[in-house]
Amino acid sequence: MNVLNLFYRTRESRRMLETSRARLYRVAYAWCHNAALADDVVQETLMKAYRNLGQLRDPKAGQAWLFSILTNCYNDHFRRNRETEDVDEQELIEETTPEMETGQLQIVDRVRKAVATLPEGQRQAVTLVDLEGFSYIEVAQILDIPIGTVMSRLCRARNALRGKLLEEFRQQPELREAVMRRVK
Amino acid sequence: MNDAPYISDEILNAFVDDQLSAEEKEQVYAALARDEKLKQRMCELRSIHDLARLAYLDPPASRIGEYVGPTRRRPWIAASVACLMLCLGLVLGRMINPSPHTAIPVLANAGRNETLIEAANLHRHSGVTKILFHLNSGDPATAREALDEVENALKYYARARKPARIELIANGGGLNLLRRGTSPFPKRIREMQKKYPNLRFVACQNTIDRLRREKGIVVHLLPGTAIIDSGVAQIMRRQQEGWAYIEV
Image (cartoon, rainbow over all chains, first blue to last red; front, top):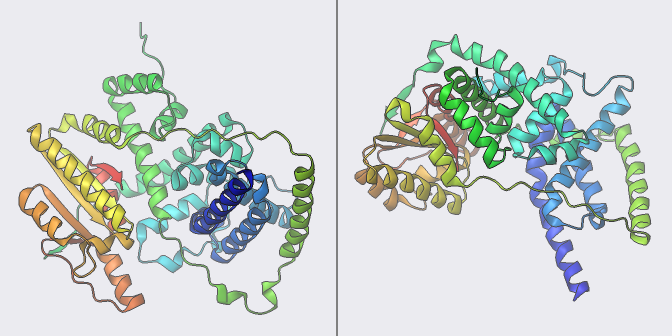
């Protein structure tokens, strides 16, 4: 019975890995704004997760576990490249963010640009909560920081985004009016 | 003099993210009812929360083709493989001598109905309740869920004789629901349109353009569907106009 259970659990976990790629990629992209790097980090994450499936006893905790591996892979990458900088203080340089690719979606562009200028730690906290809907406790475990830090980073990140975005939108009357193109 | 508890930004954020206990929520609701400024700040935080999510709904696909050639082999991958081997060693070590497992607690999400009631409460002051449903998934089960929720809300407000305006905005895969030929429920949509004049189905022009550009599909919408320049922009505008936003 136990052996059967084990097989079932492994199959479930593998399915979880297969279906999580898009979510991991979305968060990795939000962190680094670089499609190729995000893809590498996700691939690395999935490989690690696959090898370490045995560590996962409770499939319900799988998502938080998977995202904590993503955090490690992502940090590993940057640690190797910039050994002396604190990951919490890093800001992305704008040239590395390919927002130009989606030029037609002005708002999406602006939001991504604003998110890109947040310090790394804040960007990670806010994207995990907003994109993936993780609870604060889960984010604390994923990023391996105290829950109070999650709350303060989130608070600072949202305040910064509010300052950047809402003011901008408020000044643009065309964004306030509904633009009805045609009704069939 | 003022015995109302102070609501910090952290608490307000936790409220927006549904991380508070029922008791704490009650305190925030009470404070919101008293304090217009606080209410405005909460709405702004909620907008930021939604904007951030919307901005990454459709991240650009990575170009695997870029990897062809020697650049594919990045030094950090090699190092990561070494790391992997280390992890493997760890796993083996664990298997021999397993440590006690700690489960990650998962907070239960608030029920849908609670969100609807909350939406209604927030917009009560303006007289008309305005709710925006957002469908981004092409999955027929999710589409059915969306229609169910829209219909439930419409029924509720019709029964309660309260004025309400409801919009279902479809973009990305969600557009399938409003396309002739791909919509799993064209009849039901027609009937809902006839029955509820305060309901509007809205399709995103950007998605229509993208389908034409990327897949060569010319989109034909169901009758009575409105088209908006950009689904994301519309959601943003509606939120600024005080609409409650619910993602299905």
